[in-house]
Length: 203
Ligand code: GLN
Image 1 (tube, rainbow, N blue to C red):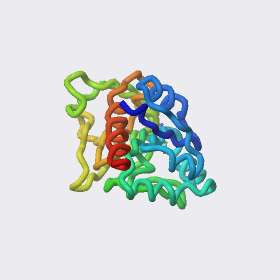
Image 2 (cartoon, helix red, strand yellow):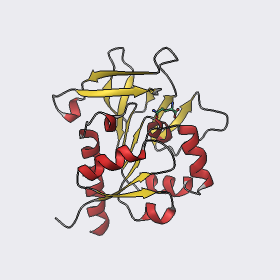
Image 3 (cartoon, protein in one colour):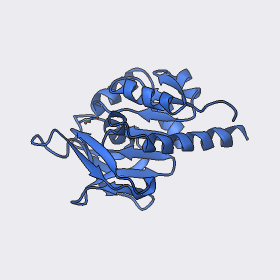
C-alpha cells in the first residue's frame, strides 16, 4: 500500500469533527478543507451536516464554490450528509432566499422535509448496497430526496418511500448522519472511491 488515502472534510460549518474522527479511525489521512490549496491536495471530500444555507454562504465568501464545483465536475468523490446532501443536489426546495448548491447530483431535495413535529428521530433502514446488517440512522432536521434522475441509484428509502440515501457515480449522499452512530460503511464506501480516484489520477 502506497500510504493512506488523503481526503478532506469541508470545514466551514457543521459536524466536521465527527467526520474527521471517523475517517481517521478508518485509516485515512484527513485534511480540514477551507481553501483552494487544501482541496487541491485531497482525493475526496466530505461535506458535513450542519446548516446548508450557512455552508453555501461561507463557501462563496471563502471563494470555494467554484473550486468545489470544478472538483465535482472532474469526478472527485464527494460524500454529503444531511446539509451536505442538500449541497450536492442540483435542485433545492425550501431553501432560504438566494440559497445555492454545488450541485452535481441529478436530484431534487427538500430541506427540513420532516416538519417541526419531527425535528429528529432515529430508525433502522435497509441499505442493500452495504450488506444485510441494517443501518442505524439518525435524522436531524433532515432533507428528503423528492426526485432522483435516471443516473441516480437509490441506496435507501424509508417505509413510506421517502428516499434518504443516493449515489451517482462518485457522489454519495445521505439524509441522515452515520458519523454520529458509529456506522462506518458509508465512509468506507466513500474512501474506496477516493482510493480509486487517487490511483486513476497517478496512472
Ligand atoms: N436543516 C439543515 C439544512 O437545511 C440540515 C440539518 C443537518 O444537516 N442536520 O441545512
